[in-house]
Image (cartoon, rainbow, N blue to C red):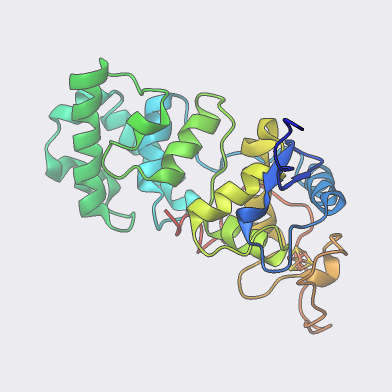
Length: 263
Ligand code: SF4
């Protein structure tokens, strides 16, 4: 009698190995060669994509990511130099008055709730972690104002742990490319984990966001100048008279009104 069990329902992928058939993609999983094409395209077009927030320390990145919720990176980068000169350490921020913190960040949206979160975060850093930002995604998510996306940004950029950051650009473009059919960030992240090699997760996230800012805009994707010719959402719906975007992508997020909306 054979001791072998039923054959597992898996596909072999170019990237990480296997994904199971429970993913329920509407049109089936994208072919491996297409995922490879996307990665290749990103590497050619956005080789140096990186976090759009300015920071020098883990504490600064934590503050900047909390400030970035529903606010552009550019706005945050204008606010943080003054903020860090007033509150250079968690210890200083923990004992500051709420009014002082609000004053320092008032040009950011939701500044009152962000001020509370920042102060409470600083107090937790001081009381629980000796003023150091913990390099653990579960611990990071216990800080007020730190959600899944923020924690993943910190793990990827501060601690070098490969992380996928599903923001509004990632959610939109992964669906346009047919890499997922899921509507929520947790499910999108799971689908991408199976498709993209783990060591590339952080860079892939930054490249996807770069593409969302440069060409694959929310309301008007510039498909006619996008080299991803196999994209299933490709459209020729544009006017010849419309200005062609600056194809030399720069990492300034000046015109990025919908950055960081998905948290
Ligand atoms: S072809 Fe159009 S929809 Fe597809 S990735 Fe490029 S810009 Fe976005």
